[in-house]
Image (cartoon, rainbow, N blue to C red; front, top):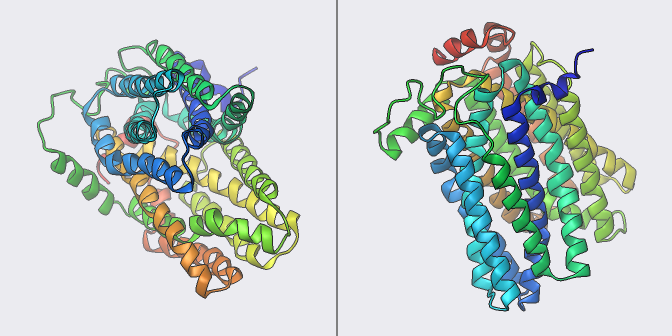
Length: 436
């Protein structure tokens, strides 16, 4: 009996090694999110200090994500991923040691958060670029779906829960030590990755360049090459335009204003807010798992944009409802449809973007989302001072479907997906992508 489609990537040894290390690493990231908070508090920090430490991580991520994409196209991705995990291990081990010795200061934690942010900026473009090199094209959807299933379970639920238990039972420094152990284990596992490229690109160079030659171009030349490809590829460009609009209009209301919806409309507290976020996370995990279990739709761009567009519509009613389960259902739908679109999107990047550009294009996608998240959150509060919250959610939930329709039409996505079917041999797909 054949294995379920969602599990087919596990037939490849390199994927098993990579996904095991990723699972351990993102579990550690979930632990760090809680351990860092209580470590700052134990050092006498308050909301301001906590914000500064969190901002340090975000600055490291945003400032270096484009460089991370270029590195993923220049340096063998195996080496890059192992180096990042080694750096994560070093910085967390240092913080743990300083904490255990009683020498830890707030600036140490902020510096560590910055280095972890830089590491993430280099890790994820390299991870996205290495997948097509270790998996056949037909297994990429399942692999992206598996990551989308693991992330909310491990990073948003299990990791924080374990860290909370360690903080309560022992101390924040013990939780930080637990994070260091996760990165140590992930680093050891990653070293079992083979040194040569396997299923996705037999005989290919494990770095990014198609002929494996040493690349001499400047940072800005490489960046321009990635941007130029994005600008002349309509389905890619207009999906990123849609992503900009959706991040700007949706993230702030969800992150900043939803707690006030819980308090003022539902009469709830922080536990109710946390439960709503958990429901949204369950929806995201379920959507990823279901997508991983199915074939990539022939009308893949249509399914992606319809999922994103229609999935954001229920959010328009969040500010008008006073029933917990109705709001929970809206967030659940948004979680499901958002993850369906994201799994398809990640697969399209890996199957339609030329391999030597994949790291840069992935980092541009990452940068667009990251750059506007803090802007959205910064604007949500002032907007709520002059507009009712229900109107903000109504606009956010209405703008995104309209923008999805516009992006779909302007990029001629329906014609594009029919002209570029993804049920052909990977060699044909890559040749077609190179000519896009």
